[in-house]
Length: 84
Image (cartoon, rainbow, N blue to C red; front, side, top):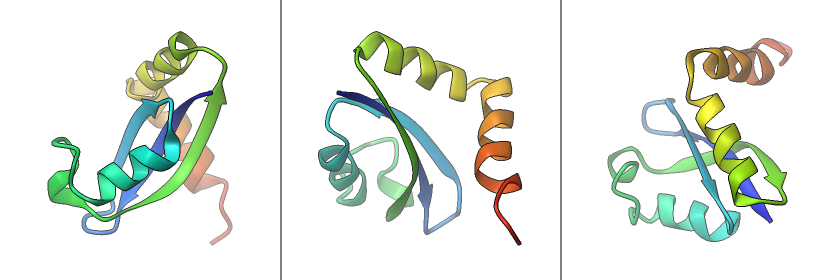
């Protein structure tokens, strides 16, 4: 399986979007500082993930979520839909 995931930093509340074929391992890497792009913002919590059969599908969704429209979809999906 291949995954697209969304993490939220406990340090600054910012989101990180990525893709991987091993979600558990990748989350450990982010939280242990082994990822250059997130090292200074650890620790993280997993907010959301989607599973895909192919790496190509996961990468396409990752690119979409990193786009302006994708950010809007994420915001609506994760924050507007939750009860306050």
